[in-house]
Image (cartoon, rainbow, N blue to C red; front, side, top):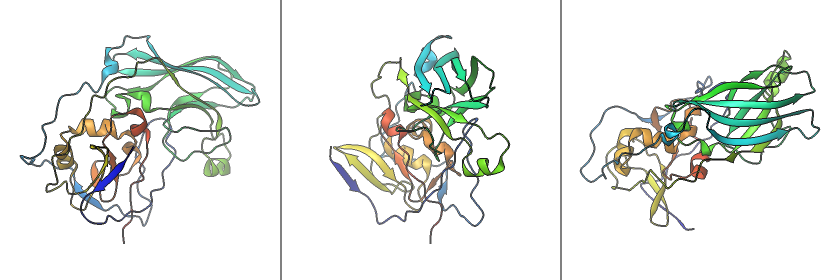
Amino acid sequence: MSTTTYGAGRVAVGALAVVLLLSGCTAPAPAAGDSVTAASVDAESSTTDATPEPKPTDEFFLADYQPGDVLARAHVAAPDASVSADVSLVVADRRVLNMKVENIVNQTGRIFTISVSPDTGVQPGNCPAGMRVAAGDIPAEATSNEQPVGWWDTPSLADPRWWRTVEINDVWQGDPSTFVNCPAQVIAAAPWEWDVPELPKQIVARDGGSAAGANGTVELEGDTPARYVVADGDVLAEICARFGLTRLQLDVLNPRRDQVAGAGVAVRGETLNLQDTPDARATYYPTPRKFE
């Protein structure tokens, strides 16, 4: 697979420290002394005649499923068998997804939580620093548990197959040093086994060419736009117009932007995914936060 890059000028790139997100996806505020240089606020703006017309997309295909339908399963167990559970993602109703946990074995006497992650290769003992979405704490004495983990109007749930791993996480339980050092250490992890079919690509980005508010760098795979690096002065609405996408479609293609402070603006130097595949959506591109 060949990758081609074209665009305007060099783009300054900085580092972003990501944080573990439990009990939902929230955007952390910038640390003291940090600054976010936004290309431009996503205000209402006009599009150019050269841009492709956005096509309607059934982003929320899972709304066609019925309550009780199981979308994914996993058996998760610690190496020493002290904690284990059978976990499934279940449709609660047409807009809510539950995490159902059964056959819980917990010999530790500690509270834990079950979370989903877009990462692969997660190992027991890891203290992950990326996005996680948890379904709440599970009491030490519980043998089963079921709690909501997301709603269909969240773009990251439009196609949840970008979640790669289910984890059992040890929850902080009173020792401040434990929380500071690792708020949710991984006890066990396993890949999801999905029961939903692989769907054809529903969102197709077509480049209409550089325009005011969308003058960044495009990376191609073959002849297809794969990624877009935001330039100074870019606006999310104009980027969408350049590639014939709705704003919702851009969010679906980039669910991990939820963990970035200022996700409602285009940030100079950040990379936006343009490919409609679970692997592409699961990829995280650090967003610059500081510029010289």
